[in-house]
Length: 424
Image 1 (cartoon, rainbow, N blue to C red):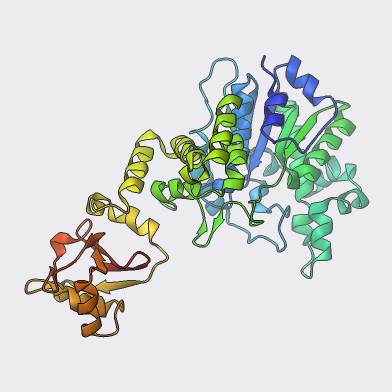
Image 2: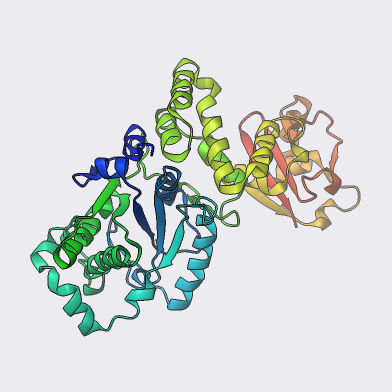
């Protein structure tokens, strides 16, 4: 069996772990799990590192379990949160679980001989507990002092809002998860990010006290960018794995725009590329950063994992054409994804009637020139582009048949001032 611990280590995915874990992973077939909160119907790039942790576990011959928190999702994990999560209804959670299962199936092999992946809903046991039974069988083994020492609790106690009893009890629920999986599935390992270390060690303690057995935990560092910002957040918001929430093209662009300082780490975290390949890309990035070779490989690899090779080909084609004269061959949604933050104007069909709208009038309409005289001078000097094609004729008229997908124009003044015109 290949050494999974060393794999995690060279990829920078070891922050804390229990004594004896490296030897265990090297000599035995291990069942391990990670939990996923069903707070939305899609996972996002912030959870991708967690998914990859399970995928690596399986690739190295071990058995992965993904816990989808149908039970704990009713409470909400306070880890890493400064305010209490909004509680979801059971119906919302069930709907979210369906979407999460579908995405996990893209990374984990549920038919693999010897170590198939499994998805388990912790509502199977947590929903069956009565309050008195849970307090007697689980709560009895944790002192309040022990729980107050956990960072997820202590940090919230220091905040103005504090922590509710509901979230305070989350640690007990996750500890019970580990015990149930230990007994039902012979699971001896829980993994996650460092903000889960307190929850993981609580489960380890519960199993030690109740069953007298040693189980293990491993956590990796919380993700931040070299610029100090939270990974996975952009000006436009969260980058989702669901193509309906974040288009594959926009997803591809997110990875393509990775900072040079982060690209090698991300190649280790989010791909299955081996050491030699990553080392070569590291050298290429340092030698010729302007070529962005590391970013291109990163975007290609991660987008293939999440959306498939077909969407990668489409994204790369769109990227190559985006600033060429062939922009009209692109899909309007891909163009909108790139230029989502630029100013835009809605234009009705009526404005394009009777042979279209004159280019001079269009330039004034989108405020790329203050007057028709200035607009005319811009066109005559070659400073105006429609869909990346320079307009030199002041008599040119813009018609619907020139629009991208029949519904969009990209109007540009010089190289940087861009305005979108959406046909309605």
